[in-house]
Length: 194
Image (tube, rainbow, N blue to C red; front, side, top):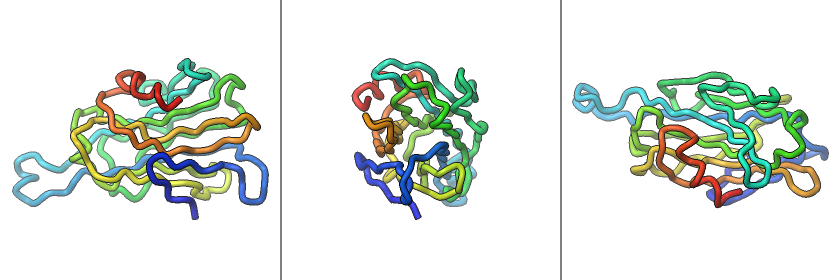
């Protein structure tokens, strides 16, 4: 069982038996808020297109990005498994990004995971949203960050995975509300977390 993170909390990604992870998957799940029958007839509830992105950094410089329009990083070490445009039940991963930590370029020391409402709905219309980090080789959930509350924002800087001085990786839950339909809109909001 993984660690449930709160905003700002970090967890080491060193395996419990020692040694580092070689590949991780960041899963994102969400559900559109279910409203009453009349609200649905008037267009409430329904499908929400959230998009997961991974921005790769060397220090404070953005080096590459993986998102729904670019599913693989230039070097092939980060892969987005595909765009989900409706969400799910908020219990399983609706979008996933797999990171081969062993293949990442040595200069890349941080990967920031974001989520955007491409269709423009706010997070007040989303429930059961989470991101989780899974050991891609074993399927073991390492850490989970559950988005608390909704809000009038259209994006969230969810979490980052960063490489320490000793080469070991850690995950930090950020959970910072932001505005924007794509990762490009979030670059200024990401900067303080690098």
